[in-house]
Length: 97
Image 1 (cartoon, rainbow, N blue to C red):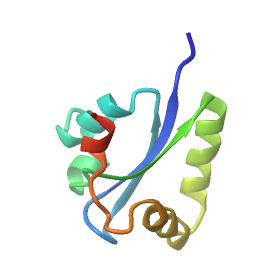
Image 2 (image 1 turned 90 degrees about the vertical axis):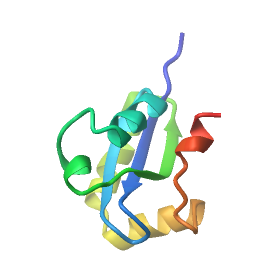
Image 3 (image 1 turned 60 degrees about the vertical axis):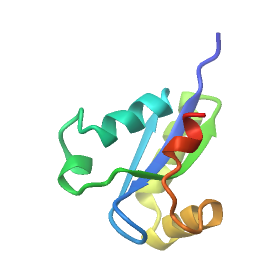
Image 4 (image 1 turned 90 degrees about the horizontal axis):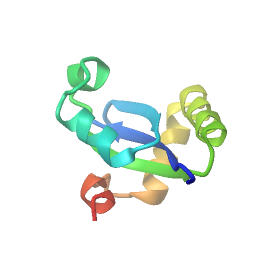
C-alpha cells in the first residue's frame, strides 16, 4: 500500500500570516489546525484557511518541498498561492469531497 504525502500552506486571510507544513493525511491535519488540536502558531495567529497544497508521491519529495517553502521569499509563496487559488478561498471543503 502506498502512502500519500502533502505540503500545504494555511493563511489567516488574503495576504495575511502564512503557515507551512507537511503531512501524510491532509484532511485530518487541516481539521486539527481548524479545531486547535495542537497548540502553537496556527492557534496563536488564527491561521486556519487551507489556501495551497501539493500532493507528493514520497516523503522525501514532500520534505524537499517544505524546505523550499521555508527557505524561499514570501513573494514566491504568494505567487504559488495565487497561481492555484487567486481568491485565497479555503480549500478544506474541496479536499473533503
